[in-house]
Length: 513
Image 1 (cartoon, rainbow, N blue to C red):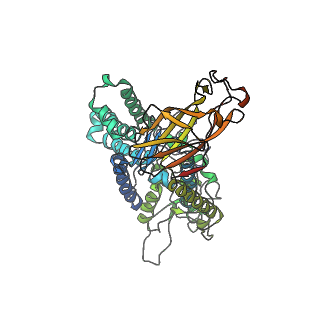
Image 2: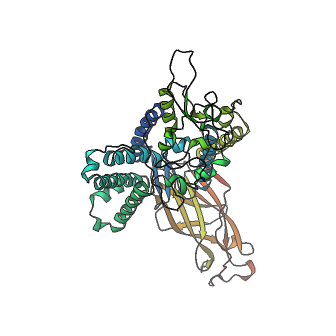
Image 3: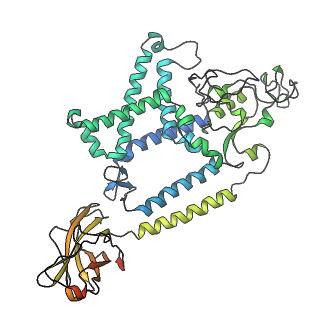
């Protein structure tokens, strides 16, 4: 049931609140309802908008507080940088977030959607107020001078565009950083056309979302509403209608007389669909069937029909209903935050198998994440066999192997690394390029390992490549199999045959983080 129109009793249910039976778009213009929840949500929205804007500019440990640099393949969260080879850490973090969503939803329903989701925050507290400013309040008989002048609609879309540009810049700051974003803004679009097109595309997406698609993002696009059924149970906190108290519905006069006068006059008693015969004065429930709960709903549903996937737990219907109950002298809370069990008179349980299991999984994942983060090494090293012949025999009887060593510096400072060969007498490793690696950067260094012929047995010898840093904070030993000629078939001047089976040979016998 849409907020812009109501259906008669007994009519067929709608498939979507934003879709008519003819398949056309029903535009929702929810009527604002003032109350304690509206005031609380407004304060939360102002704080969150400030947080969304400021976070990209904050730094911790000389790093951005939050930066998801997809181009550089680096994610920085709360001052900790995750590199592409931090697979375990990233996996633990993502699973921890998902299980946390399950736990919060099982306890508090879709509280994120109605109170903290950027889609809801900007839609309900930025774009809809602008719409009411330029178009007038929905249902009002007299529109403001802007709406009457004919300039209201064009000015509204100009305001939408300005806000969309602001949102696009804020959104991109989380992915490219404020320094790069500031550079884009100061330079001419002709100097960075690709960056300008990215900015233009994000602005267009914001404009499409908030000016056209609007609440359909929550109803159609967002999967959260559709999967909430597997996260909720009958003890989860939801916005619910007290059917026992409210039914059957009917219009009533305001309470009169003293405190002991509790009778209400039913002016047009009429039972809700499926609740039995027409109500008498004694049987009438508290619901006056004013449809204000429908008119104020940002997704256009009728909360009296029970829990629905479109409900985002925003509490606008609670404020609307409480206002009506106050006017007619009835107790508030006909629509309220509660659980299905509680509204039906059963005891409410916070601790239950679902929450215990989710909590235990979260505690385990958090412990593993903290352990993995605290034991994360200074660097990561990969040794790859060089291209071409697996070995070369020189005239003096020395066998050389070409390798490629990739070193990733995980710290926020420049580190110089050193290489040596351990476990093979007379073996040396040389490299022409510097092993000075930039902060959170990587270096691929070709190296040559020279080993005396006598060290080989049946064409192979196992050596240890030791990597150390210049501050004695890191030592990594990697066992690597060096290739050489067979002992009985040694010809010093001949190069070894190609061995396509020789590839990455990485392992660790010792590592000091």
